[in-house]
Image 1 (cartoon, rainbow, N blue to C red):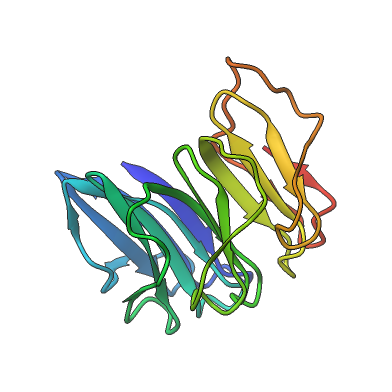
Image 2: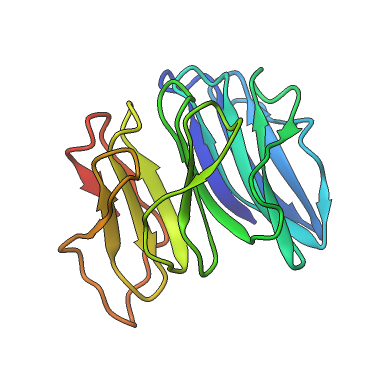
Length: 193
């Protein structure tokens, strides 16, 4: 099962996370999706990669996972060849991740918690002022200034100041509405979910 896919702005580099026979892998393509190979991200057993996001160049890649009762956020700064576990909390079930075009600003959310952000390529992480929700999708503008996040059985929240403050948008919001995917234009003006 393919759970998440992301692409560089040119479409040359693509990354996707999958679950295959109990082993979760991160795959990459450097030829517009013609061929795919497993990256050197850890192969997870009894856990799962949930989401992946890349910078516009394809150089910086971020992937989040759940493993039993904990999780983590990995980063790569060389097109998926090498991966490092970031300093983000390992006690959370991370579900979603999104990065700015440069790869500098990263946003990640977990089950029943807040959205976290990094402004230094995943080096350090800070809890934003987002409400505590079951976050199921997230996207950001090319600069990282505008952020949108969708909720399980809820609405879509928006931040226009790098995650500093969040407001509920006018998108449908009810216990029967779940936002599984969201994306926005490079300016952050146009949003689709």
